[in-house]
Length: 85
Image (tube, rainbow, N blue to C red; front, side, top):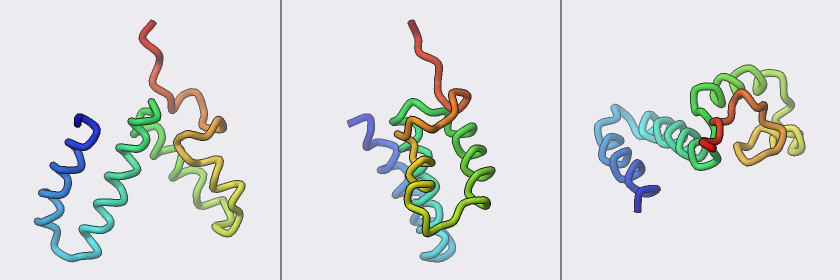
């Protein structure tokens, strides 16, 4: 139930987007952030990492794109939220 709550709040916020494309863009960013959180990543550092790497990657190279997914073992340690042990 807690995992769904941000999407319910987001869905209500998307109603106030100025255009369908704006709502879709907001939903994509929201989804990336929530997926990063679900994979124990710091969303700010993960997005920074993506913005640094994506311009230098061939969009047709599936292997390179797979390495950027939030559950990939290739994600740098600084993007990860430290364990509370």
